Image 1 (cartoon, each protein chain N blue to C red):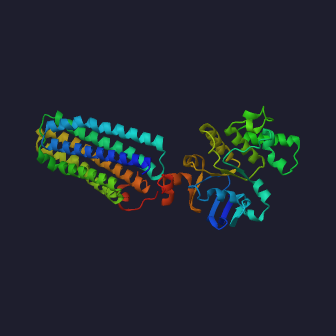
Image 2: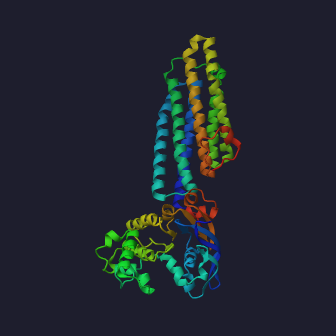
Image 3: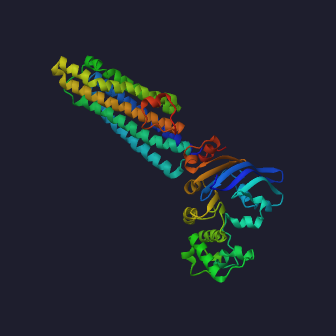
Length: 252
Length: 229
């Protein structure tokens, strides 16, 4: 499909002999918000980390199959380039504690030794913080440490840091599980805004969050992609009995 | 069972209790009419308050389950169906009470022969049977039985369509039977509405069990054929 940004073809992940993600085939379109849900240990985070080649950083972790980004296999690309093109936000907000808000946003450039003029840095910082719905709150304290911010603000700072690299795709691994409901709500509202320019894949344990924020939802169980469909369809009439059992809490 | 499953089981039991009460109301209104039993008719009017209480309680329970459990998939469909079935049953309760009120207010006796000639008794029996079968379909999640309701509602519609002629003949035969004939016509109109409510209930049962929406389809399409989502 022309609109496809990322596609997994017979993708498998392993931790040593443990087969964690099994033969996943999935096609994700540009500017979509995709929720990935499933019980603990179902392989959803491992799959996510396979997309930007973070899985291979774990000793003994391997993978097989293809992850195509704009038609090109990420496993044939430079891993650093892949991670710049595919940003990631984690469960706990993790701004660099020794860097200011400003430096945190451009950390991707600083750490990769990419030279950018002061004027361009200013533009990147303002644009990224605006996109992350944080600019108004921090514009007068850009040189304070990122860790002075609240949990929700820190998570939005991490999103701004990911956006600064102008990725095509942003991966979120349970991005609000460490946040209070108000911060969660602000991050969820941000997903709707980010969708205009980015494709988002969000791993979440919170089914209501998956229902609220995503266009399509993928359900993983025991390493398999059981069902991938429009979120409305998944939450009103899922095709697979396992999906229905999971979302209605009847999973044994 | 999960807390949500417990809530849904309790709600289902409550709906069935309401169903049995409404069924009994319809039955008693028939008996009151056939036997011109004003006391029984008054009992129906008093018990109408219980039907209303059930409606309010079930509405409130559904609201609480939505707020506290965020149901999805089959649970969500069940609750949406339960809300609508609740309204349909309450309206059938209103119809039974409306007929009972005719019996209480009427100064003329209802002639069983006239009720036979206008097919009123047959219509009453069919309406009660349809209501019983929708309950069975609901309890057993039997969509085949639910689908059979659509055809059987046609029987009630046919009697209703023929009513002006059959009631007109009663009046022509004996002009003094005019008040009684008009009551009979009104009851036929009300029973036709019972069929409509039962049909709505059958649609909700199919929606709940199969996630298929049958609203606004012709009954000839609904009975046998597969309708797309």
